[in-house]
Image (cartoon, rainbow, N blue to C red; front, top):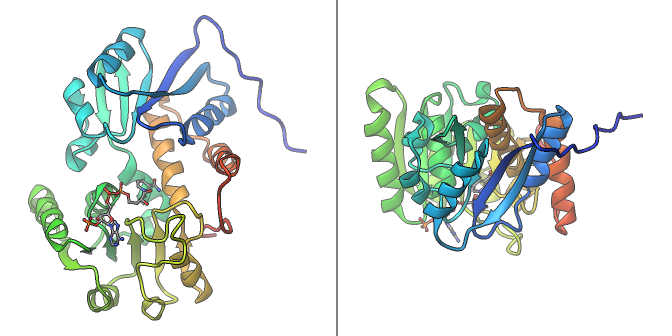
Length: 304
Ligand code: NAP
């Protein structure tokens, strides 16, 4: 029989981690992080706070209260940077913060989305490989910036070509000097997809195409998928999107967006506690939380 985790302990020295954003009600971070704290018997709790306005006041309050750290979500991932004391390289590169560490009163901003992506795929599946990324928004930025350190070639395909071009240029100029990675921007259409996928072993969808309720949509025509591709979808509702289902059915390796979410949380946990995150406990809490929200829709599949 599985040993149950120790009961939640709250006392006068319990530390606080939290999420700020708007909305936050749908977030599964509280379940995921509290499960992690419990699994390692840490005297910490995690709560979610909806901040309507007055972001600066909220951050000031968190500092005064001596929270251990906090996560930041939409719409504050960029604006929160004005209220922090320092930014880690990850936040500087991506230009957004999703995790803050309170180190003895100094608030340091990080971005763990990119590392969450790399961990969910496995670095061996990115290193010296070609990567096709669909989208040029927040998720794509994190994926491209982090992957540019490892991949040999990156294709950014976006509905609005100018955004893909701007991201490609920005990444190349910020990281270019120390990189051999080629970064190319293209419009998101079947012709470009065919060309990009010919040179890629990894495909990452970072658009909301296929997300509930439009679950019958896929950003990639089925005929362009190959068995030897690793296919990632940032969407996690449903857990298995049409893209992932079609990829799985032809024998490709698939990774869903929940894995990125869990691993970005794991990286935040590590920043706050200095400990390796209990990923299994976090994954099972995340899945349970999604089911509690009436989700997930579709089968739960990750790469073996
Ligand atoms: P975002 O900043 O709004 O960017 C959305 C991107 O998708 C843009 O490039 C946009 O293209 C493109 N797009 C939107 N609708 C499209 C459509 N109908 N056809 C073609 N392209 C379309 O959003 P985001 O924060 O990057 O999020 C993207 C997806 O990733 C969402 O489903 C989100 O839930 C998911 N996500 C997952 C994680 C995770 O940890 N798993 C983390 C972050 C985000 P244009 O530039 O042309 O508008």
